[in-house]
Image (cartoon, rainbow, N blue to C red; front, side):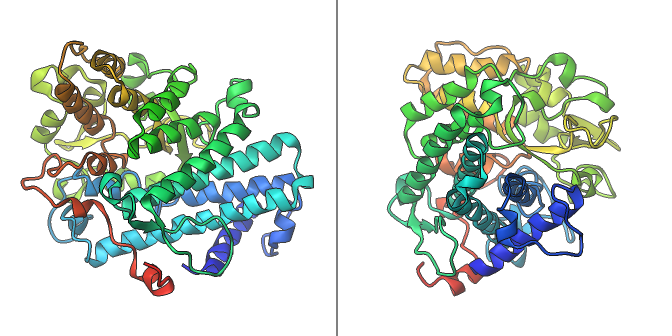
Length: 469
């Protein structure tokens, strides 16, 4: 997508937020130039707020990259019939107008946000004198972490699977703000660039981030532990199990992200913690989520086939209720009935308190969870019994019986897959797990698929603009 258009969209977003949130004293009808935006520390902060706002839109993590499109790719929903959402997506029909519309929105909005981040990063150097040492470290560290996060997401969707396509062209890794088309980096190069951004981000944030030094919750920002968690995710994706284990342990050993309690998970509807807020290492606040998620996606309205759910039998299979899974918090308190049909209630908007409360339990989308760090450690452990121990930590905090530490490596791998299926239902992570593990039949599919189905086509508009693919 043309960089000039991307920057214009980003600056418009930042200016609109500046006006409505009153971060700067600007008349809503006035304009704010890039130079003015980066003339103050609060301008830098507002520019980052603009990026978080883009990430929270339906084009990205408000919908498409969480509960919507990418969860439908992973067969989380049994939608069917004319007029139902995600029918072509569920069928993996990548040439359909439906799928191409989603992938174009994801691509364009992601690179728009990346362009905004590159402007922030460029100005942290060009206008270093504007920033205190604290804010320089925080703003630059967050921006680098976000740039890495967004590029890695694009790689997971549009790039080849790592082991088979490390040397193949994948996506452009944009680090500059210009109008020139960038030759797509190979999969291996993207990983290297992502890790380089994360290394610098971690160095900047480790000694400055309030979540580290003052025990302040910053899960709605790209914080130090989110950077390390993303590093763990990236290293596992690229086959570096030892590095993934070390990075994940930084998060789990921090004590910053306690598991949800039984009382919180099972509370009355008005105060139930369905998303397990304290376990979220990184999340985005989505204040308008009720306009599409509840009741639009996850409540009964005429036909369950038109809604994002599955049958009672499917949910029983998913949570293994016939084999001891009936005690699982995720099944008991997040698969609920609506007009006799079962629905995932993870994103139901039932919280009874102030809708502007920053600790509201339902107006957000998790991007990285504590549980994923334990799954990564379970998979990366060199000793099977250690891996079982890591997996049991999550199982026991979901009210499931522990697995025997004597199980085989193959059975441990199977149990890790089951946990990903249960934990990340409707969150957008499962499709990428299937891709990384080269699973030829996703749960609830009736036939195998070619592994090529895990690489979505780069949008035609990008190929028209960029002849380097």
